[in-house]
Image (cartoon, rainbow, N blue to C red):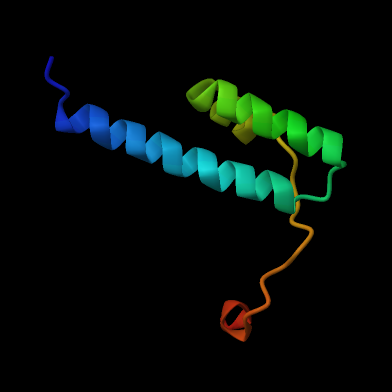
Length: 73
C-alpha cells in the first residue's frame, strides 16, 4: 500500500492547523469547560472540528504577545 506525498502533506497541514487551533482555544477568554469542549472536538474530528471552530469558535486572545517586536508597524 503506497501513501502519496500529497496525502502525507495534507495530513501534516491538518495536524499543524489543529495544534494551532487548540493553542488559540486555550489562549481565549472563554471558560475552562468551553475550552475543553472545543479542544475535544478538534482532536476527535480533526478536519471537521477545525472548520466548525473556524466558523463559530471563541474569539479574542486573553494573553497578548509580550514581545516588543509584535507591536512594531
